[in-house]
Length: 551
Image (cartoon, rainbow, N blue to C red):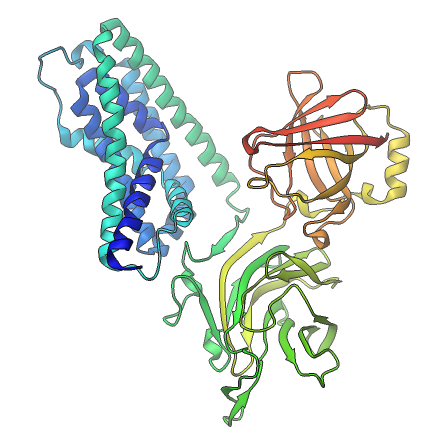
């Protein structure tokens, strides 16, 4: 696009991002309303200006790729949130006990207080919540705000529009609040101070509890992302861009490894070998320094355990009618040390040449699963390697290869979703259910469904077991029927949980999706006679029903 098109592209996206960041009515929004009512529109607007400047600060951190700042915020977000929450509690107490007669603005009276103080308060209230940077990352990705063809002038206009959108939002809020301010008397303002102080204090208390819980669970690793939104951090070299990681086969220093520490894990990424075109030869250097030309150089994943024993998965394109797995295929070889564990020839669902494919490697207990494809994850290899615990995982390449890797995500799978119940055994489940008199316990199947394709994808005609859980609720165990990522699911794995509510036969439900990640949305389940369980996902405009086929 030309320069003018780029400006127009940035214009509405910047305004939209600014409004969306400012719109959630958190503590600073409540403070802005309170100050507008108590001191006038200017005081409220100045508070919003401070919040907008804080939002712009975080936008600039994200936009200029300061990944080390983001890493610092992510590692210390609980401490920062704890300090910010204590400040909120203190300010909430101050508002609760303050006398509005000393601060309320009367008609015709000049506004008391300093604009600098109002701006500073708004800035500190907002900047004390570093989690907003993750909202900004999502918005930048959603609106494609960061594109390589844009010039500094485009980005200047984009960030200018962000601050304009944020200021426009606070201008509208203070405008409408100021219109109704005349209807409030001193007693009304006294109540508003009490309510505002209480709400802000509650925000602070919730923040303190969340931060303390987060610090208590700091040892549990969260997903680590190494993608175009966050940059590669310690994985990056001067040859990499903000969006991809390049692995050159002739440069061993470009081989990159991640620390896993022997845990169960899932490594997801997208990769393509740029030196893999059909019929082309590429310059390379052999181990002895001899120059040569190669076709379809291989690349791979390499894990090592605590003893330094490598587990290697090689990917190599076969483009030869004389090859037994030809004429065209992707050959996958899995080996431990010098011993080959498996050889697979893939003839569909992946791009054999320079196009990108998505891959997912998962290790859970003794089980290893590899899947991949152009548009969806298809099973590639599955095997058991008892006793092998990887401490590192990374990418390697043969001489001549040039690997382009992005959208890297590393998940820790040391969670209930990765374990299997003994009730996955059909005989054990039958014996258990034969002794049960609970009408909810039994074997259930998918009866019907109504899914919003933009929110929830069809994942399978599940067959599930519902059994009593240790906390008075129920566990939902997977038995069979997965269509999405079937290699990741084994009988007896936890698929969800049911928690009792104050309403009879109505439960709060937790559901684990096809990728074994908890679904982050409200889910309600209602037991209906005879033998139907209706599940509603209101935020996703979706629902499905399970039918009990055996008690």
